[in-house]
Length: 65
Image (cartoon, rainbow, N blue to C red; front, side, top):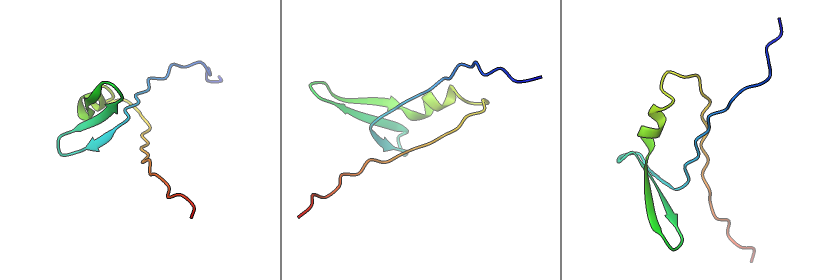
């Protein structure tokens, strides 16, 4: 029997500076300031579930001279 293709995805997107020592991601928002998110608390929501995990770093590129 074929597997159904319908599914529900549960995604989490946190954007900011990662501080593993404190377990925080700090996002800087214009006209608001810094907002801290507990990285490990959010990960706990996925504990015991099958997941895929990816992480990416943004870097500024130097201008052409």
